[in-house]
Length: 441
Image (cartoon, rainbow, N blue to C red):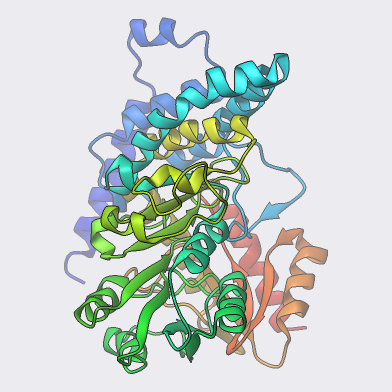
């Protein structure tokens, strides 16, 4: 505790410095910003002022995050704490999508294929840079389910081959494996994780103990959507590769949420939904396939040439697609990079722990998410003894207009609460008030 006063002093000085800098604009910067809307000018100024402030400190600076909040169009009559389902896009992304949609409708076959489609390769390059891999390993699609099922149905598995997955994985993936089991005779080996957990060895060994000489693939959900549990993908992947087992990662909730790159995971395949934590338009996703693996996977939809060609683009053969959605992803990448991956992760973690810490000691409250940054970030899950998740979910919405979601899946029962970068501490204080009132009802 000896360092506490010093830290408090540093935070106070940083806050004062931040506020002082917030008012400092050069004449050139001022006049060049006049054509921008007020929220954009404020956002730009806040980003400049935040330069040099540590991410941990900036996570608590409400003045900075106020300008981030102004980048979104939020309903005044609803507090959205279910960003784990799908996140709203900031104004710049919304505007780009609408603009590209208008272009498309001026002359669809011309503007879609001869103009907008020409932006796919630059977009692929930007996504690859963000993911930390090569452009030849990234395919652009519509969501993580499409990407993951591309691999699940494209792998050349035969009767008797085993796949290890968890009962806590996403239902679409579970059902896809069951379909392959029914159709092709593969064998599914299901593990059951006790969550939350901060025991890395336990989490890794649950997968490793399920491996056999017949195991060909392990499916790992990087961040469990039900309660935000982070799974140590790299450790499990290392054990899998020692045994010649391929690794497919469901990154629906990890990409642009926690700070990592593809090499960090050691995965062979990875898919994500960009409309979650990247804040891209609804219906946009990304598939990563390690370069040497591409030639072994059949595309989900047929291509014009050989299905086993060594080209990541074979996974994008969707026919006519919403080009206006795809190209607006670029603005989401820009927005994410302007905030910064580390800053974003620290803020999301801070918001999750803010409400959890205020509720953890209240009688009847059970937290189903770890407060440790290694094992969780934005997503939290709470249960109230003697109450069903749906009851708390309904109470929060009816009495406080707070939108959450009740979770009842396998051994995870509770209400999932997921703030975002636009969430204010006032929003979370109201959440705490509502849950406290519910425990007394």
